[in-house]
Each structure stands twice: as structure tokens, then as C-alpha cells.
Length: 479
Image (cartoon, rainbow, N blue to C red; front, side):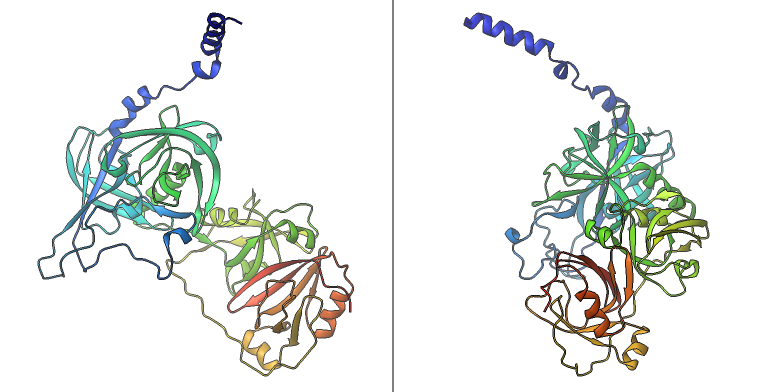
């Protein structure tokens, strides 16, 4: 093929490629919605010397893998030069973004953007500046509502996050590093993401370029509707690395309504400790697939306790909504108003049951009391097929721990096949859907002795004030 013919073919391919012809145009969206996005900065009095970020002793940067960081830009020289009462000057920092949700000045942003501020400054795209006051903050979802004294302001439109599809184009507008009305675009990477310590938000993951200062800014769909609030990034450096997370706008609107109406957010609770149902746990419990939330323990006197929920139950539905993964349950319960009557569907030893439950209210702070079993000299017993030396609980231990059965681990051999430690209390063994309460060393060893070397079992374990299900795959050869 001649060079001239080659270029003609290439040109024809470029002109006819549908992907190039369908690249999105964001100009109209920005022109119509950009005015409702604001820059938020704060002034905070210097209260102590050494305002640098806290460091973790013994941890070097290269040892820290991925971690979540809020978008709070730190300005150079933030270390602080004065002591209180010794000429220390206020420190001004551009913290983030927000967007106007009502023409009379209500603005939605992240709680961490404004929670420590002595003075909040809001700048509009027309360069007008206002002092803002905090209407309410909710740290559990990292949402905040502030207000400026103004009228006739431009407002955003809201979309439905449930209709958002993975792969769909989205646009962020915010103030990264203080650069007002910066526009970045990308696609929805995933929905319903769970992040560490974030139990009440099904995050939307995107690859939109988000940096410090974008916090609290809106995420738009291609119809110019706000579908989420940019909140967190996943990064080694604190800068953009292609993993950004946003709070769905339906969650945010529910929170802001409660903050405006009551100044606080009420959330439901049922009083259970849960964990994920892994494939191995599903196998040992006799389930067809991994699903639901496995109940580790039930708080005495809680709504779940009153409804008859038991440890080792697997919750598969809450108020008619499927619980596919354990992190679905806190969101569903938290979004339910205290006092509501709901049905709870559980799988108990292979049988489905429906329990009626009245949802309680999640308190602001809860501190669990620690129970510690009293020490006693262990009786020497040979290790079993798990590589564990166990002993039966004394009557005194049972009374202290409020248990009527269980075996305490007194020694863990090097070839142990379970992630257990000395002092753990083994409550139940589950295999192929059958649950056996552990009451004696002899019974436990007989149960293990009757299993194949490749058996998958699950142990219900109490450690301190918590319980968990530990799965073991494979046993030692029979002695």
C-alpha cells in the first residue's frame, strides 16, 4: 500500500470511529451548574504550638500502603509559631468546597471541612463573600450543613444515585488547592463501596480527579444533577491516584433534613455484632452461597435480643430488603427510624425464620465493658487435630463470663491450623450446617476425629468482650 493510500485509510478510520464522535461535552453543564458551587475557607485560632500533622511513631512513609485521607489541604508553615497568649496569630486555611441547596443560603458540605472552624468564609463564583454559620454536623457520614445570609442564590438540581450506572460519565466541580470552580470528569468505577470505619454510607467510587480542596463539592451526572458529594480519596501520597469516593446524594439529603429540623441525626440500631459470610463459612454452615450477615453476638436487652435473634443466625433480609453482604445491614438499620417495626429474616441451622423487631436508637457514644476471665492453672492436655490444647471452663469461669458452655484455649502449637490464641474460648463448632455446642474436651476431640482431613469447619470464638466466627480449612492427620 502506498504511503498516501495508508494515510487516507487512517483518516477514514478516525473520522468514522463512533467513540471519538461521542465524547461528552461538559460545557453546558458547567455553565448552568457552576454558579451553585462555592469555595469554603475557615479561620481557626492557634490553640497550641506545633500544629503539624500527628505522626505515628515507628512508621515510615514507605511502610504505609494505601490509606484513606480527607481532602484537607495543609498550607506551608503550618507548624505554628506562638503559644496561646504569646502573640499567636489566627491561621487561615482553604479547606474545601460546598454547594447551595436552597436560594436562602443553605449549603451542603463535608463535616470535616468546617467542624473545627472559629470562622467560616464562603466565596461565590461572582466573587461575593459571606460569613457562614454551622447549622449541623454529622460525623458518622461526614456531612455538614452551613448557611449564609443571602437570598435569590443559584441552587443545584438533585438526581437519583440508584439510577447511576457503572461506566457512566460524571463531573466534579470544586476548589482543589483553593482553585475555585475547577472542573474534572471521569466515570463511575463502582457503587456501594464500603470503606474502613464508614458503616452508614454506600460510597460511589469514581476515577474523577479529586484533590485536597474538593471535599464537600458536588458530583454531577450528565444531566446536570447532583448525584453525590465528593468525600474521600484512596492514595499513597494524599493526591489523586484514580480512586475517589463520594457520598450518594439521597443519603446526604436525609441527613441534612434531620440536621435542619432537629440539629442531630437519629439512627436505628438492633444490638448485634456481625461479620462477613465468607465462602468457607457458607460451606460449613451448609449454605448454597455466601450471603447475609453472620451474628457473632447479641447484646442483652437489645431489640435483637427481644426479637429472639441468636448468635450464629445469618441475617438475610431486613425490612424486606436483601442483605447480600454484612456491610449492607448497618446501612439498612441506620437508615431506619427508631421505633419502627420491621421483619428480620434469618437462617438458623439451615432453616429460614422471620422475626418481628422494634428498631432502637443508636446513641452518640457507646463504650463496651470489658470482661476478662480469671486466670487459673491449666491442666496439661495433648493437642488436638487443630494444634490446640484446650480445657473445660470451671464453674467460676462460666459464672464470670456468663456462659453455660465453652472450652478455653490454653496452648497453641506451632502447627496450629486456626487463627486462635491462648485465652480464646471456643463456643460452637459448625460443619455442613450442623452446630455443636462445645462442652467437653472429649466431645470436641471426638467431633474433630470424625472429620476428613479436608473438612471445612467454623468455630464460634469469644475473645475478650467480642466474639467472631473463625473458619478452618484442613485438619491434621488422625493420631
